Image 1 (cartoon, rainbow, N blue to C red):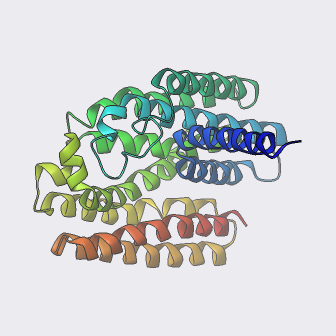
Image 2: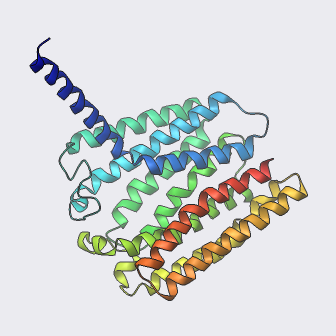
Image 3: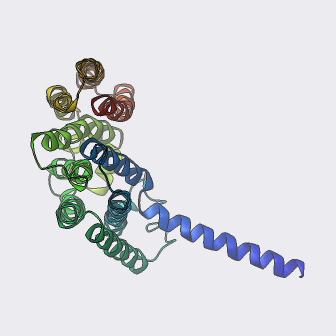
Amino acid sequence: MSTTSSTSITSDQTSVLSRVGDYWELTKPRIVAMEIITIAMGFYLAAGSDWSPLVFATTLLGTGLVAGSASALNQWLERNLDALMQRTKNRPLPAGRIEPFGAALFGLVLLAAGVTLLAIGPGTPVLVLGLICWCFYVVLYTPLKTRSTLNTAVGAASGSLPIVMGWVAAGGSLDFVALALFGSLYLWQYPHFMAIAWRCRDDYLSAGYVMSTTVDLTGRRAGIEAIIGSLVLLPVSLVPVVLADSPIMAALFVAWTLVLGGIYARASFAFADSPNDATSRRLLRTSLVYLPCWILGLLLVAV
């Protein structure tokens, strides 16, 4: 084989890998990974010792595909706005590495595959929840971002449903525990989103997004929303303690959750008192530590 042919093959392989990577990026894999973790936890909490590997696998994969579809179509719809922001201008669509038609088709194929798996595995209730989650993100949240600050409330709902999907897939009912699991993730997102909204406010202004930090440039409104979210989160996040069989595990979960909630609330108050890059960075980092640690605490109630 000549050196020229070898170089050509290597170049073609690199091009294919790069294109696969671009489509992978469209799914926002970090968000999908977090949703899969919360689905698995919801499933684990409801399943106990009686669970189906097939249902578990199809729930995780099906929901992951639906979430990836929502992210891809979100980027397809926002491709022109993404081009206006430093944070997103190098994404595959605004950078021109993927054609809009290809991205839209990719998103629809992922949706069809995800819906099929959810229908085969966990069944209609989880399938309906998955479609509601998808609609909240693509049909409501995405267009609302340029129209109303209510986009945060809608987007948070989309991000909170996966843990309920896992719960229902394992046989759990839509009771107050399921509502508390949903509510905990929903409220957690408010301080998290407010920190991001502050740090990205210049980009959001450039793209015309209507966020708490763009309608109130002082950051006061975002700070108040962060405080409210973190304070209401404290009691709601304690509700899953009713699942604990052992008083010791229950006490550990309560103590662990109160400590986490206190740290999160403190970071929210600091941000509200003085909205700046340092306090928003601290709040964002605290939010990213809080969620996996709280999920870890859920393991205590399931032991």
